[in-house]
Image 1: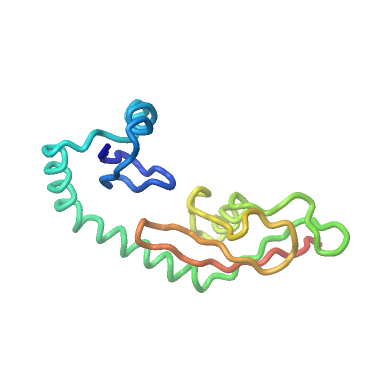
Image 2: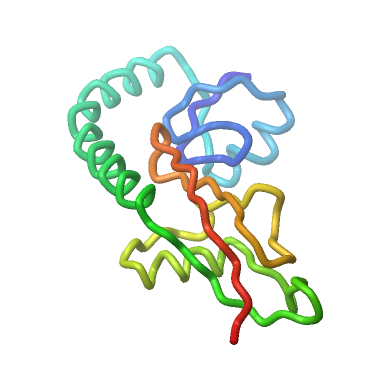
Length: 149
């Protein structure tokens, strides 16, 4: 079953993508929740025209995302957390904590667009995360978890 996505669906595609899914997934999950519409020939033509008109507008958004990406690459992020014996943390550092740290630096990024490699952080040390600013712009962000004094 071919569908046109009306919004981003994780592990499937982005808004306005034409995707092929199994009939049950499309009919019972995506379409009733308003996440997708059936990709008829006329719907595909309308989508193609809308994408053509939106292309030059999106160029400005991509340029802004690239500018933010360059700023993030030069940023040194350090997150202080309470530690127990050794270098083990009380709790963990997640994408929520990283989004808050970036917010303090002046970059408001939603937590769902930040993915820490290896999941949540349980020890002190340097780590990496991927920040998705746009579907075409993904930045590798290095950050460090330090012990709180």
